Image (cartoon, rainbow, N blue to C red; front, side, top):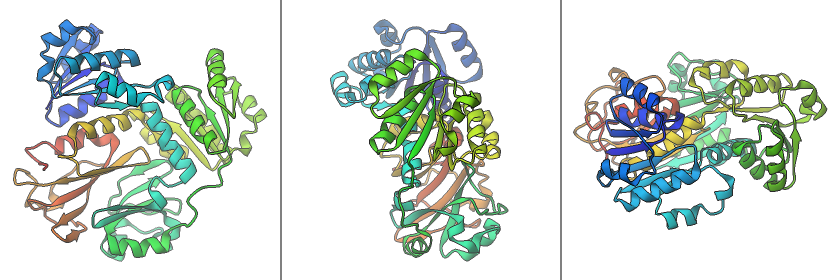
Length: 453
């Protein structure tokens, strides 16, 4: 696959790394010469210093020979123009990042008028995930999701007391043709090992044969889909805060936004109905007390600074607020999240990179994909004879941490894999992967190891 990425920011580099890991031919375009030099020294790709809007540059690149162009600069209009030019010059598919709320209700028209194949909006994506978590409490519909002859169930561990304080290796013996593939613990999704002990406050994701899963679902299913959510405080009135406040207000939830920039406050006041806009510093504890932070059902920190989001999440957690959500883009902070007791932490870079990759791979590669709490995903692929992992016991595959073979569909049979399970040609394989491990997953999905129909 031949892909051009325009924009060498955090998202552009995240996508680039994942595509390279998958064996794709990647060209990265950016105006920053120093950045392009650093990237070319670290990664095996073609770097081009220049303006992606330049028709001359696109022609020199022979953009008509590319399968995809992804425009992820920090300017919406520039991304739109770049994609339109590239498509007109013969690029097969074009993808644009468009973040501005002013485009929210006209994305369909933009796609059609400018011949853009796919549009991603990181801020809206993360706002939707937070909304689903807060309002529905479950990211899966009623905690249950069907995938062919298998099903995925999400439920609090306390609903199945028999598994509490037990190791996964022992729980596997208790579950009938089912497997605990993931645990949500203090806001962090983890892929459990055999020695992992299930704790009372854990949320479990169990995948199994559909009939067995239905029986378990009747035991653990909570009939209440929605929470008693009434009051939410949002720190940060940027694009994510705007989208989230709009979603929550439309659901008749009382929302307060704290934003430090006065001009931004005026914008929010003009564009959001039934939302209280407060001009101030969200780290000011006096302000938080005056605005009754103790009475909030949820606190969401989506400022532009990871450190501030983590600090605010810690402060909110100390106030015993039931749901505390933070946006954290820096992967090096991942270990801090669990220690701070955050209900949910989201990395917009990983989420959008996964979204773009799934579109690039298309339906011929991915049978289905399902994102979990904005941190991980289930995908299903088809194995063929070119896969190096065929006829090899799973225990010997040495898959990276954060990736697990969750189930295998073999004809009419559903196999919940164990260490001695072997993948055969033609099997449909369900994989669970942390979004942070997508580059490693893409490396596993190269044709020399994996193949797709």
